[in-house]
Length: 475
Figure 1 (cartoon, one colour):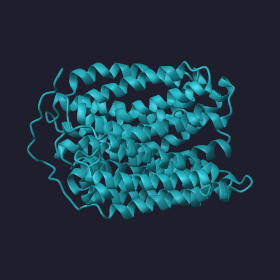
Figure 2: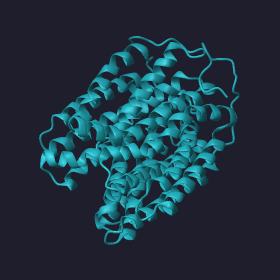
Figure 3: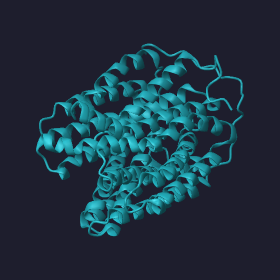
């Protein structure tokens, strides 16, 4: 099985869509992780409490998750290329504001704006990529896209530690500025504009959907610290659930819904969103607690921690392009089931193999196995959710997928954090880590069960190429 597209089968428009979409995804995902290893340094520089600085992570996650669906809906109405460029501009300028912050309040505010830019960039990048490639080639393209995204997950802690130790914490934000702003002219000139529908914007749906996401993410962020039975946590989670019900009821009756409920009549769309929710929850919590294990138990520096995690990220980088091609040939469900099973087994072995001294060798094998599983599952899940919808729905399908991914990340850290706190007791970090990994393995197994509902489908691997219109310059 070839791992690259046959010569001549990729048009210039497709090549630019792949490059720009992957670059944007890399930048956005990188910024979710790069701050974590710099928090201690930022704390000393800004003379703030660590609890306050945790909101430099939470503010980004919160605005990102809340605004994903609204941004996707607006992109479908006014143009995906236009919203893509706006998101890049907001992200780049907010990154500069982060770097120039002299106090924690300003940094948190800038991070919230940065998350808003990311919310516009991420679904548009995925929508542009899906629109550029015909169904028979999307698996390969999404495999490349997934490998670049996986590289960002792995390199985030490494880059954060290296830049903070070698330069200063401000540079973890300055590096975004030329990437984001420099990409805008290429998006303008190389990417064709795409519209979902000309119907009016569903303002009530936008407001109710954003409020539901805000309540759910806010409650999940606070659950691990305040407890699930805290009045604030329970109230926001219950309120968020009620708002979800209200949102669905309204969208069913809306003449121009922000999120067409008919999309969920597809088993692949519904099951794939459940898979990414559970899988990304497990992945995020695994990275979070494993990085802490190396630093707390092993005494590693942020840079050393990132380097130890590199072994986990090698499989996604090497295998994801092949996995996308395999999904094209054998269908998504087989890849999702094999990948989620391997991931759950690898993380389960972390819970068993980690000793009191957190020796690296027993952990390395399970990390590699879980990385292989992620490399197989993620491109196939993405393809199952966003590649088969109608062209007009690509943007909102991408936004829904990205929202579920972010909600899953918040949920995974919250529930694993609660179990960790209970098992760790008065300071037994390894005991808490083992329990948290057991939770992550259970989430991975839940993703596998959800994958059973994916439709069995095989796309011929050698179809005649579909003509792709040349990218529009200005429109």
